[in-house]
Amino acid sequence: MENLRSRLSFGKKADDVKLRKRNSRLYSKEDESLENGALGVRVLVFSVVFRLVNCLLVRTSFVPDEYWQSLEVSHRMVFNYGYLTWEWKAGIRGFVYPLFYACLYKILLFLNHDSVHLLIWLPRIAQALLAAFADTKFFFLIRSLENHDTARWTFFCHMVSWFSWFCCTRTLTNSTETILTCLALYYFPLPGSKTHSSKKYLALEEHKLRLVTHNYIPIGTLALVISALIDCVFYKKWTLVQFNFLKLNIFHGVADFYGSHPWHWYFSQGFAVVIGPHLPFFLHGSILAFRKYKILLAAVVWTIVVYSFLPHKEFRFIYPVLPFCMVFCGTSLAHLTARRRSAAAFLLVANLIPALYTGLVHQRGTLDVMIHIQKLCDVKGNSTQPQPDVLFLMPCHSTPFYSHIHCPLKMRFLECPPDLGEEGYFDESDRFYEDPLLWLRTSFPYKSSLPTHLVLFNVLEKEIFAFLQRNEFVRTAEIFHTHFPEGKVGGSIFIYERH
Image (cartoon, rainbow, N blue to C red; front, side, top):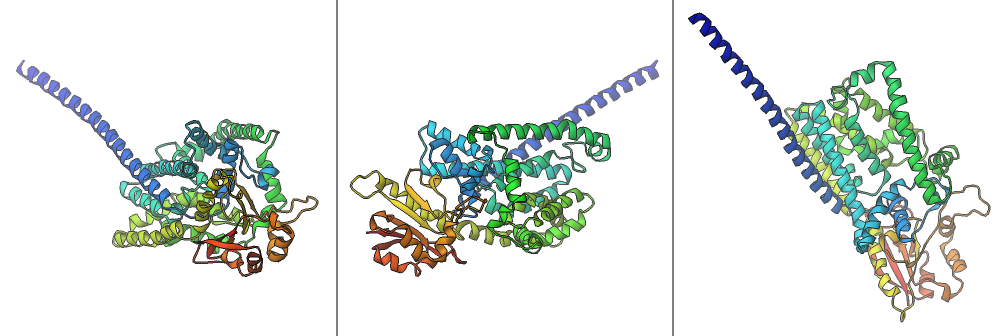
């Protein structure tokens, strides 16, 4: 009987122990969940602060599309004035992207807070917040694939990239594409990913077919239909911009009008500039993690190869594959146990210098000049003074336009649409630069037809000095633009006013 009691007593204690074990596991999962939640908040807060600082420290221009294919269109959608470039007249641009900023502008208008400063900065801030959200998702993707150490160094590589700093808060479609790529990558079934099952996705043919027929085609069709409907509303006719874009830029070669590069440009220059000081770490990491992340490496190579077939090439076109490259860079740093801190310090300094220089110094004049032009809006309301009339004698689309002054000031710039086979075509910008004095004499035969203000790069001043002197134009401002003037783009911008 005593033996039986002892056995029963022992069994009861064993059950108690098991119960406590289960409870401890439960609490462990809860603790882990709380820990992940706290880490997520810290990463998100850091990313938001970092990208907002990033946004404030980018005061330069990059390419015209940053304004002319986004903010200028949005301004016209909401305030009924703004310039639409030839792409919108040809129906090769979609309104979906500008509609996002137009909604922000509409909110400001509704709240009666549509000041020019908010119109300029609110879209940039919104872009910065989206970039911060994508940064956070990118960190947790790598953390689900790798150990904490590798995830930490991959996130470090991603955040210190000079090109990401330079681009991610700009109102460029390429910046938004990169943000969406980061978000999509989080849900892609990479090997080892905890967010999806990759085995079925990669191994079974019938499941791939099901994925295409049940997901890719319906989602793609829905996106195309929504895009077409939005474009039809704003174009006021049935327009399929995707088809028009391919027809003009690919089949008719209109993109070549904006410059062409040799086929190897991305391999010999473009990719090296975009990835910057990360390049040796990317190459090292590609060797280390080739088998595990060969699909990411294939995506990078495939993108560069495809874009290499197009004559017109730009750095920003391959920006969306940069996060893929950071996975290999982080792997490289994590394996450099002996020289890791030195390598990280090198990456930080080597990226910090170009990031600050390109963000604060290089090509800032075309934005700063609009601050001076915006002050003419005050003169416009004064009936005792001549109404301002501004002519930009610069390569077309050098500066932003109405989105950066927010008043219906009379402004004009040199037009440069491509030849679309229309009768009577001419490139005003080319005509001007062939003989600036002749163009000015022909365009303004009488003093009464002259503009009140001229905006030009300093390299043009000598060529038209006789015209300026004869018509009593006086230089009123000189604005720094770049330390590296090239061709028609000078180191400074001059504003001349007629007296």
